[in-house]
Amino acid sequence: MDYIHLNPVRAGMVAANQATGFRWSSLGRFARNATFPGLTAGDWLAFRGLAPTPAGWRDYAAHLAGLAEDQAEQKRLGFESLSHGWAIGTAGWRRALAKEFSHQALSPGLAAAEIKSLREAAWAETLQDILRQAGRTPEELQAASKTAAWKIELALQVRQCCGASVVWLAQNMNLGRPETARCQLSLARRRQSDQS
Image 1 (cartoon, one colour):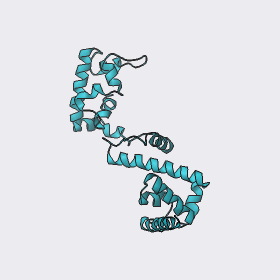
Image 2: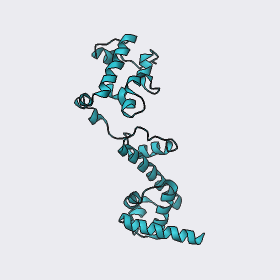
Image 3: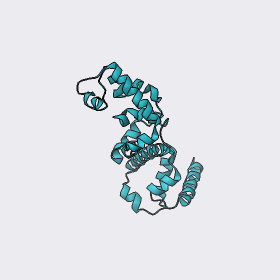
Image 4: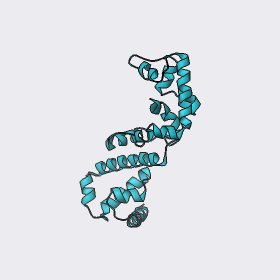
């Protein structure tokens, strides 16, 4: 429970001493005695020797604020083993989540790896959409030669649509080395502008 209640603090969304004020946390509901059926805290609060009273919640909030500052204690409690990236779930679910929230700025407080993962999930969703629109399959993408004109055109569309990195495109579209992919994309862009 401590790990869950400190999530918005670790994400940099709220200060440690304001954890009970985070709108989307059950902690605030508990502290205001505004819970709904099925949301109970008696057992785990009693485990800490506290009661679900205003004084008990103040003591628990003070405990959380102290724990938020104590990295060694968080490590001892195994917080590191509970964190698995920006979202836990299948790759498809993460792509759907990234697509749903792509219009919002989700990066404040996220670690660089989480931001990268979120961005790559959005790129993967764009690639799937563009493949579908082109009537191509992921299997065709992997089987075609690294410099197949249609693959380069699709890669250029993905890059222009969502800003996918050349390194990511090279890896995920089987385009060979990033340097080669960069040259191929540049030539395709030049051909495109010549036709305009």
